[in-house]
Image (cartoon, rainbow, N blue to C red; front, side, top):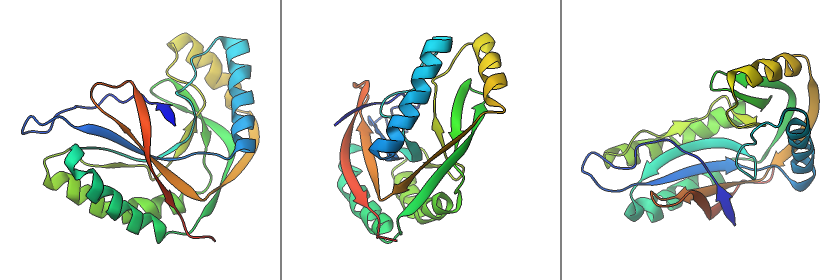
Length: 197
């Protein structure tokens, strides 16, 4: 599965070693994904706006690491994530980021906060190898657009301030996506399944 990702992070550790970029993602099921896609197509038709990378998902964590660390990271993440229960994500409103994006608000913050706490050991591990700290998303969101111009952002923000939606899906697994310094596309390298609720 090829996944396009855009990350603007440093690509080398302090020792000058090249790093890979990793994203831990929660992707919606097909039905919810179709609803998100329909909303994005509306944005394209009405505003000719820039869409985010596909498929669109919720970022759980993002980090940089050396390739030789990968197998240990996957083992630790498997232990951490397989101990967590699956959970439902509901999205009923829209928000705007100062970076110039419109997003779907995720109502359930607690499961992501629990994951962020559990991933502390991963953060300690990557830091011990002089890699940047893990960015853990305790207030997750699902992007509808990529970065847009200030003029367009104002129009989008005004329209979406009062709009509502009703989308939800069950998070049963998290995907780990890797991108190296030479790639523009990410590659799924692991699937971590959560315990049934």
